[in-house]
Length: 255
Image (cartoon, rainbow, N blue to C red):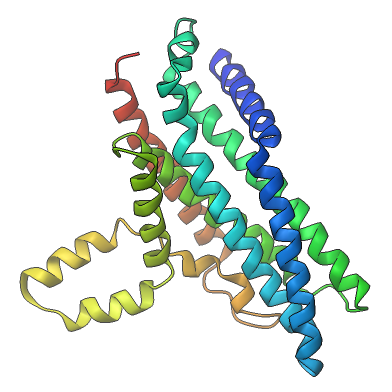
């Protein structure tokens, strides 16, 4: 129970820190401008205006939140190491599992807040144009957050062995891209043979399938890529596994 309250306090402090960070405000403003641009694009689409506003707005929300997630997660621990703040933290009885869990939870909450603000901006634009809320909209926003949970966990792990913030963001960006082309990757793997096929199949297990959470591609009546139980288990696996690997690396560091 003590570890839980420690992680809770760290998460709360991380959320407040991210909220006050000027990058958070800049990204929210930037997202608002881009979503407004989607409104202009929707006007030019005539009969498909509602769909264009929704799809383009969700895509811009995802890319903006991803950019912030990569920058924040890649620097949240390394910044405290560089500024020696982490030594002050561990001079107190702070368990490392609670510290990592608190940092991750703070980032999760920050992205939820950020997505909520951007969603309100987009919904206000949709309402202003006189359109109804798309049936799949809330599900799409939630699934965007689910994908961000996975990539944040991966970024925190990568940041512990990467040489710089830039390399962490680069590796994480590649992972994000590959995770959206798993179907194409499987096709190429099936076409390959020999040792290359075995190597590619092994690497495929370390790439999350983000296509499972692309709710906006399904529209209002598209079939679900997987059942809710499978998606929940898949999300839990890809959030907890990087955390456990991060904990192994974190325990080896001298603070």
